[in-house]
Length: 73
Image (cartoon, rainbow, N blue to C red; front, top):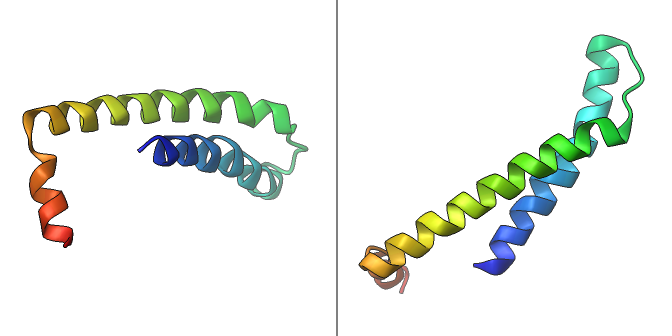
């Protein structure tokens, strides 16, 4: 699970922000600074990954995830 959380932050927080820049240039016709997009994307993806991790750990503690693990085999 830690790799999934780090992947979420990297994929959404950094790659997602970088992919927004050409779209903003096309739609708004303005130069977009890289540092304008990365902090908000990173903050929201860190918060989302943390919340998701807490929810998954809570579900695992209750035993809900055991059914998911058995169905994969």
